[in-house]
Length: 83
Image 1 (cartoon, helix red, strand yellow):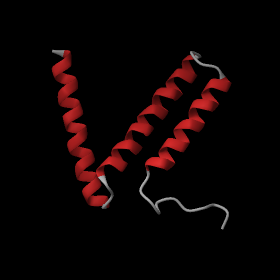
Image 2: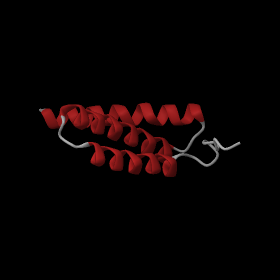
Image 3: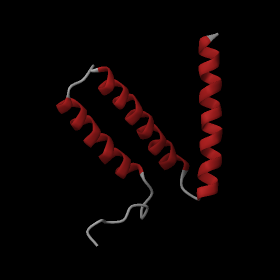
Image 4: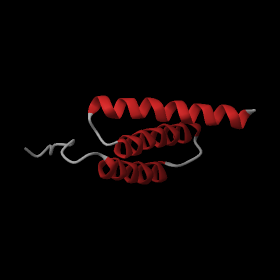
């Protein structure tokens, strides 16, 4: 029964993300990648608060997630802070 509930949850999330992508006029795969990166940030934070990973591992993984989020975002959605 648990597997069925997970499948329903994933289908619901896909429908919500598809609808959001259409409203924001961004490609669905980009929005899916950004949402996945957001979930990874939450999981990383939970590992850090439980003390399961150290500071250096936390910083390295967070840096990789930052780069993956920038890579997945649609072109032109981020502006340089240097201006």
